[in-house]
Image (cartoon, rainbow, N blue to C red):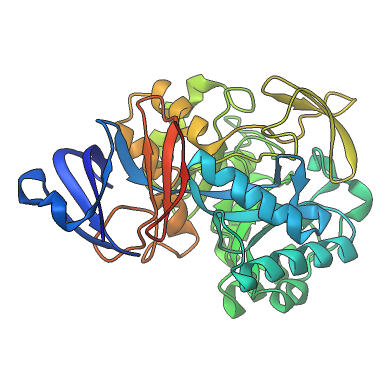
Amino acid sequence: MKCIINGRIVLKDKVVDNCAIIFSDKIEKIVSDSEINTADYEIIDAKGRLVAPGLIDMHIHGYLGADASDGDADGIRKMAEGIIKNGVTAWCPTTMTVSKQEIETAFESVREVKNSGEYYGSRILGVNSEGPFINESKKGAQAGEHILKPDADFIKKHSDIVKLFTVAPEVDGALECIEKVSNETDVLISMGHSDAIFEQALAGVEKGVRHTTHLFNAMSALSHRSPGVTGAGLSDGRVSTELIADTFHVNKGLFGLVYKLKGDKLCLITDCIRAGGMEDGDYTLGGQPVHKEGIKCLMPDGTIAGSVLRLNEAVKNLYENTDLEIYEAVNCASLNIAKALGEDKEIGSLEIGKRADIIIADEKFNVYTTILGGEIRYKGE
């Protein structure tokens, strides 16, 4: 067995010092340093850094030039092996509103990689299908020509691999789709790319919506007389909300406010595209041209097109721009997401019996070591 010593251990409700984590493929014990006989274990010295649960990215389209919508198994493996260096130990490859055939091909490529287990990087939980059941008026960077009427049977057909999907609750057939998927599958239903009024959004929640796709972005805005999807997502305690904390998609001054409203239902995401981890320049998203410059990814008409955010950076940005404790910021990229996806019995926090998905990071949340199921999968300098 292995043992991490000299770390500040980030638990779900506090940070503890002068303790060690003993683990195999699961976390066996969290004990005082004084109880450890280092000769009994393979020792990992955290050197005073944070020891935290592995991060979970539930909404990521691409990385290092690859994109989940490409339908390329090698690209999925490349992404998995890239994001583990950012401390991500579990993820949901995320598809776009492309043609139905392309979506199904993408599902099959993720299914192939997930079921084979023959990849070295972050563990796939399932697909996040962002579209095609959206409102064209809020399509953002999605391709309008491929938008379809909500189809519960399509989601049911692929419910072995689809972990969550996005739907605009106000479009024709949406409420029926939401109700059927909610009643007949375990798939998480998210509202987004939607121009619903507040009452329509709440009708979706009543039928089974339990999540909100990238809060504030590509949805009807919050105002005092018309709260929209944004207001419904913020005010309804049944609904978890995604936040792209790159300081561009959402002003950093709102981070703390959103946390105060959502608490353990706030889920940090990257919404990263294939330009993530790459140089500035021209790329594509869902077959459409995108230009990356710094943290901004824009289509030729100025439409925001995803991000190049890394999830460990999102934790840092949330922590540095709020009064949150570090464990609260970490929960937003781990435990809260595990709960939303129904995976919290196995992952999301450092607790005895859970998978030994562990990262070691400094105070700026730069990742030095990533451990997946007890095995070191990344070790930086």
